[in-house]
Each structure stands twice: as structure tokens, then as C-alpha cells.
Image 1 (cartoon, rainbow, N blue to C red):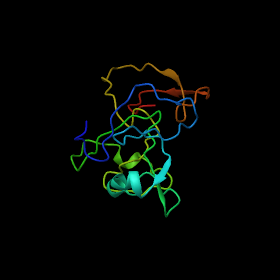
Image 2 (image 1 turned 180 degrees about the horizontal axis):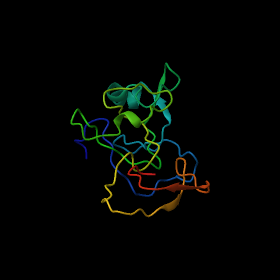
Image 3 (image 1 turned 120 degrees about the vertical axis):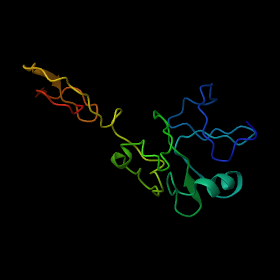
Length: 154
């Protein structure tokens, strides 16, 4: 991994010394890896090469001496669309607070897990109404909502 470019993100599932702290402090090892936990770190010194790559994409820190690491706690990573047109929900994502939007809105957040999609329903001479729970951003317990013949994901 010594040849990985500055700014590379790698999934880690190991034990973190002192990881019981909430939020955990910066954890670096001898080759300058850090957790993507959103903390502010110095723009100079140990993190200067990283700052030169990501600047303030994930947060401005104090606006002068620090910047924020990405905060991927509890999140999934997504590859950039780069103009391919495969990311149909590109415009549905939201820019995180204190971040600078670039290109494919890298570092953005999508509040739903599935995104917009359709399911084709074969036409029949009759309909079957059904009831499902309406959920606002995954919030269970809302009143039931009836849905008859819709093709939109709920």
C-alpha cells in the first residue's frame, strides 16, 4: 500500500486502539493513514499532501489552519460518474455542510438508500390495491399510505 496515491480511501475493519471514544480521535500509523471520521486536521505538516489533494471538499475546518477529513462513518462509498451518465441521482444528492462542491458532487450525501427507480407493472384487466407504510427518510411509524397502480418507488 505504500504506492497508493495521496487521498486513497481503503475500507478498514481492524481494531482501533482507543476506538471507543465518540467521535474517535485521529488514528494514524507510521505510513500516515487516518480514519475518515470528519475531524479537522492541520493544513501543514503531516496532512499537507492530503490538503493539496482534497482542499476543503469535506469541510473548511477553522477556515485558516485546518481542514476536515472525509466523514464516512456509517456511509457507503460511490464512484464518480465522470460524465458517463450512469449516476441518475446525481442531482438528488446534497452537499454536506461547510464543503465545496466540485464536478460530480464528490463528497455529497444521498439521503435515501435506493434512489429514484421504476418497476414496470404488466397491464391486466383488473387492479390490486395494496397498502404500505409511508416512510420519510426511513422514519418508521407514519400513517399507512394507499397505492394503486403506481410505478414510482415509495
